[in-house]
Image (tube, rainbow, N blue to C red; front, side, top):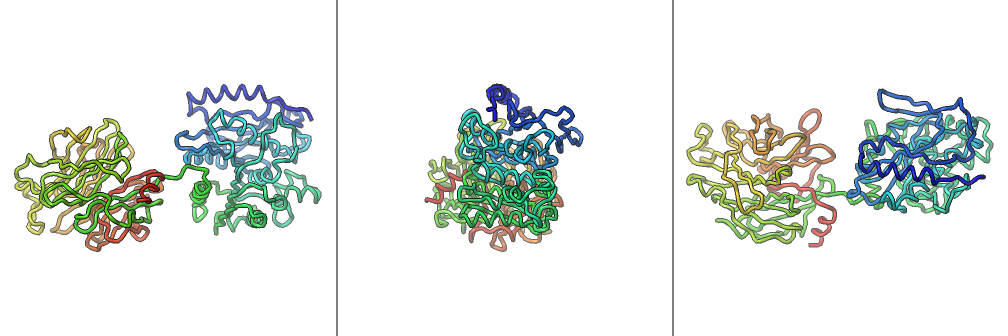
Length: 601
């Protein structure tokens, strides 16, 4: 067998990569040829690639003559160098290259994983001397090519996985069990062994009664001998050196029976090879990244497996800042990995004891991370003071000297300065501090004796350094007693979550106002997004790409949450759990390392 010369494609490849660094959006459309000279190739001019298109999108390809890799490089700052080579399915007769290739590569990029979509040759006696090994040749060369260029592309050569859907899953499993087979002569000793495999509704076996006959006929021929059937029944080829695997299948798969995955898993288990399998009640065959029902959760399950095996950077987590009682003991913190289950830190004792203000309280602690890398916190210091507390920290553990900021000192008739919050304006590198105050004599039309004369509006100031502050201004006057504003940037504007404090007729619920600018003007308040209970202290963050608002069900003495859906706001209080006694807090996203350090306190 003649040695292939890979120097020319490598030179071309280096040029392409250099070009991609300048135009990344164009890079994903560039294909890298696998071979300079395809091994055991038969030239046949009447056989050429056919593309199935839907508009401008290539949904599938047939009659592949030139095998390629399409590279999707992840953001280097979000990656630990893991790469996955993706083998689309199609019964060894076509490649579903969009649904089971390009879309999957984009999903991997979102996780910080580099992805390579393999357009492999489909078995054909017309262009291959031995059609049975043609796809395996391409898979082996794909792993070798990625591994050889790991340093150049900033990849980890020991974290290269193979992924396959359906018949592509058979190819991935074949590579995982036949990576040492001499199906062509490589130019060096680079290993073709994948470090792990991801097998999604895979064809595994060639045995009667379990195989996908179309895949078997295309790969082995209609009259395959028993030796070939056994050799390419990959569940029979597993040994202790087979790479670990993650498997996904639907029980109601009529095309490729679920026993394919089950038998592969049991064979791995017998050889004590690490494996995880997820079987879903429904989904049929070919559901890609998931369509509906339980199978739609498999990408999230796979993400957890990848994280557990250190193939992706540990995901960010969340910290909740809150107070207990009247706020006399100071700052409490809880953490969560998923945004639903919250656990106390430091045995639910205080991280910072209040020292400033008339009453020396630390109520409604709001923490944000600024452009300077510091965490900035403001809080309510008293029921009747004209200012708030402020401190900063690098790690949420060690805090600067506490300061009192007299935001309402200029207002003689100001009664209070409650529930301060901070929103950082990334564009202007400015912090906006805003809070609720009652100024006696203002807005008499909404004054209520039932609220002891309190009649709040939202005021604000801006600062770049928490030393110099712009003149205090009115931020929001909705025409009712309003408190507990919390503002987040969403899409192209800002959303203010707020509490309607009206007592007669009773409201005591959370609403929304929107603005194109952080400093307003904000729209009329929406209808309530919370239910038939009293709610306060909203704080919002995206969980699983859905906006989630946590709040204090203060009369019920527990915490709740609502989540935005296509049908409106849904109460998910039954899905969240908070430490006992949690009061009015804020949620922030933090690194896994920071959570680990907080756990040590």
